[in-house]
Length: 73
Image (cartoon, rainbow, N blue to C red):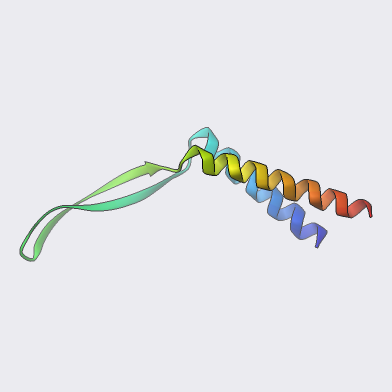
């Protein structure tokens, strides 16, 4: 249980920092125009919102602290 908390916490911390720094993005495809069976699509790279990275950092920190605190018992 302790190792699981620590590993999950560290993964969330690293992912949260990665997103907060600005490296997190995803692709979104939109249909621009459609005429019968033919359609024009555009793919855009969208940035992951910064609040998701901050939430990952906070949650990851709590899991790491919880894993360390449960180790002392």
